[in-house]
Length: 108
Image 1 (cartoon, one colour):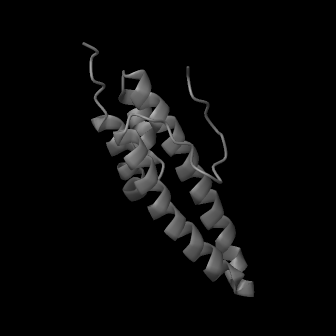
Image 2 (cartoon, rainbow, N blue to C red; image 1 turned 90 degrees about the vertical axis):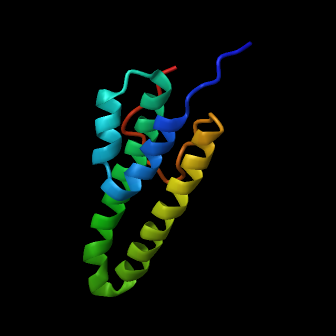
């Protein structure tokens, strides 16, 4: 009988990323020993760093009013993407966040 993979840490990685930005996934990437958890942490880290960049870009754009819209969209996408990634992690699948800049690469 095949050993069932524990998906708890990968799920937590995506959820904690929403609350701690890039800090939570970075800590999990550094501290975890499981390759699967590290890959999920890399994906979450890529998205959280990308979202932070998008938010920083939105702030000066607020002077021309479009920044309010882009900031709102990034915040909503962060919620949706983190939930979707956590659901995929519960199924044992890696999910690459759309619009994510690949700062780190998945280890095969």
